[in-house]
Length: 381
Image 1 (cartoon, helix red, strand yellow):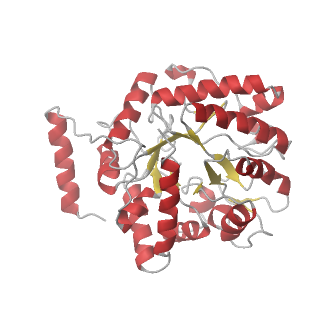
Image 2 (tube, one colour; image 1 turned 90 degrees about the vertical axis):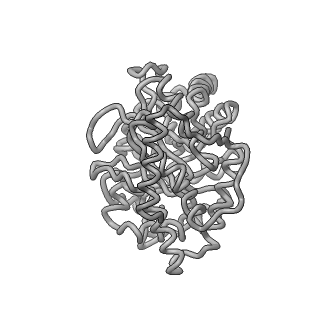
Image 3 (cartoon, one colour; image 1 turned 90 degrees about the horizontal axis):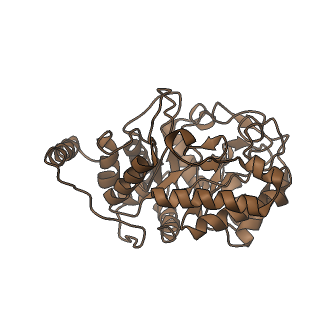
């Protein structure tokens, strides 16, 4: 997207300002939204990436991605899967607070700073780094006590607000159809096998996050709780096990005005779409989620680098399919066993722009996604 000379000059600038102790961080918050953007800038707003480093000094590439490419968001992790090492982005509350502050200050547009903080096994803010103990959604659903869920949800939301996050990829609204599902039931990520209990506790989590100005995101649409395999590792077919009842939590949250965003799951349901998993399926996202359930807001993909997508579809193809299906923000977590790609943000944006110019994606579809993202960002701190 940018020539090599611009990139060279950019890194010279980073080195210069770093050496002379000058802070080059234009202020940005989520209070105002830029409306006149180029195609490249609108495409960049549709991209959320993961990166390495506990500070900007450790990873100047993310400065380029935010300031020059102008990506829409980042997602932080505590463990680096490619190198099987810690820390990735999180080493202490003080360090994390500074990192989130610096990231937001970098951005010429409001930046979504996201984390997966469900509690229990899906917990990036671990005790070993100085954060409070958490419990799983499965544990809270077993207690089925509103006060207990409120207590833990409030503590999580307060912690995220203090650190500088504005988006939590939680709560998990999967229904515990298969207790042995390796990525849901087996690690206690679902509140319950009863969709009404899932919706009840999800609503409490959302309310406590909103109290602290934190956006939430329900996952993994249309339901991952019946799976017997892990979509991180490969194709996940739930055609024989998925149940319509798994839609109930989503429908209730949408009807009650409690939905900020929804994340797709990379699950395959043959009678809904005989060709594509949910993230790439217009039948799932447009017809089921938008037309039938009435969701009009932002749809996130699950990580596009997971094997269910990356091992079965080529890079450009998967981006075209996801956007045309109705995904508004593509997540490239950059934290898979296959390795780390420092230039992933630029590659994704270039792919989107190229596909628009080749008329594989309409510019109207990009504008539609951008407008949804604008509306979401108006509600974050």
